[in-house]
Length: 270
Image (cartoon, rainbow, N blue to C red; front, side, top):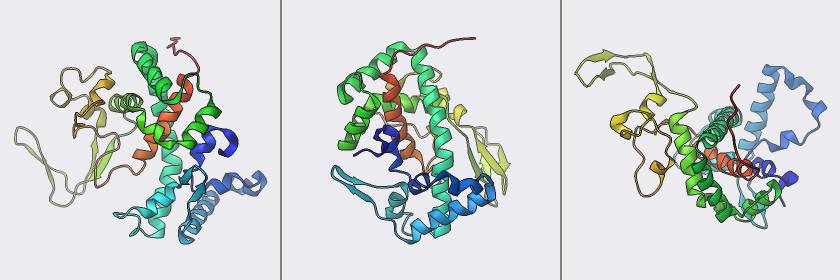
């Protein structure tokens, strides 16, 4: 069974606060006040963490929430404190929705101006998911076999290329005491205790890293055995990479397939 009979219901399985949306709306009138909403949200997440929330088990297999997956991570989740997990889940709930929406918008933009790429992506959707897939059918297919998403290689390449040219955000780091940045010419800049902004779009279009095609939209660069350059940082890199990277890729692929099967995309200018 698919929650709400839709792809949105399928994706809601990843939301550890799904129980909130099932309560009566009048019970949450006070949540219009941000401070009250924040306290209530913190309490809900903390309760889920402390109770050791269990994953759902369906006939088609085991589904896990984001919170379950975070708790099982040997490197971080098992050592994280309750306040840390609360902050991380809130990052998923709020930062993840807006950034995914922005990425999907740019996907459709580039598909509209590169119809040949749209044709290739639709051919992959037809081969993996079946032609003319409506929302309910797609949700059923992904529910019965989530591994189908892993077969959408070209779709993932398109999403990665979009994030290369249109990264959602930049990176910010604090320089530790005594830390200096050195230019190629040997000039040093003391950045101790300064906030340093890494401009991701500049890194992603740097010709010494990406070659002469750095400014061109070309998903093929992310296909095959080629390694992804270290200069690719839409989600930053370890040890402080974005916790929502895999979730973003997970959300973007089925959403791209849904709209892709509803018709052609055309860019309209005002």
